[in-house]
Image (cartoon, rainbow, N blue to C red; front, side):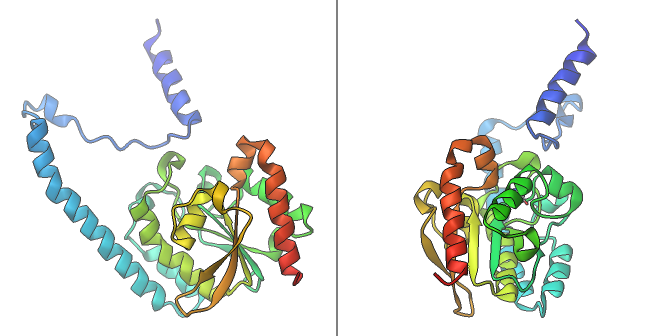
Length: 258
Ligand code: URA
């Protein structure tokens, strides 16, 4: 058997599954003759590390909040996000993907995080999910230029994994501040991650979708929000498109003041 071919097949399999980075700890101690720690010792030494990680997530969240509060405009916020080093996702991402679109839009769409295409191009919703989103917008008479599109996270999680709670907590102030600058009339939450992050709950998207809910900014402005299925979910589950269609009809009705 050709061993190189075997390795290539395994790597192709990982690449197709979206795995494009490795984060394994160095196994160098094996060749250097250093005895690896016993499981108990490893657990004991891991505790301070876990506490330190939790503390650094808290202070990153606080510094993100302070930074966002000090932003004087949307452009200033984008600049501050690009210089922000408090989220480790930035280390593996190629781009910082900020929101884009009509800054005077009455409607803002919020997704979860950039995928591979968005990371490559530095723009939100430009891959297959974005193409479906544009088709859904067109179906109700809207164009991409009519709306503002952004994500909870500005950096792609490696292999498109689900973001952790602390990654969401650290990045959330940047999304909240974008909402304060855009001041949309309506927010559409694409998928469970966006809905849970902004509405601060853990309900499933099936339970949340299709109902008008309220998002309150830190300045006390109430904005009507509707959660619906994420386009990536619809690509995998086309039978659910009918429900998303009814959600988009609700959105247009509300936009027209009905
Ligand atoms: N999925 C998202 O949630 N956001 C994007 O920008 C692309 C895919």
